[in-house]
Length: 71
Figure (spheres, helix red, strand yellow):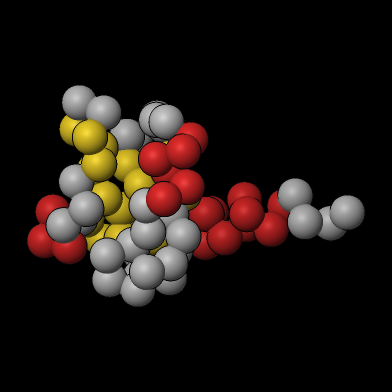
């Protein structure tokens, strides 16, 4: 996904930053626990199209985002 596009996109629910998961082709919002699909390179930023992330997924995402902040 284009880095400039990703930098401009925010969660349509809370307006928070999104993290791109290339393997799952999803944009993830940790605040709302939503995963927005990316279909054919186009982000689908509709709340009713997003899936709810499991508690385990949210924990894994939070752990991965804090892992690099020990510097």
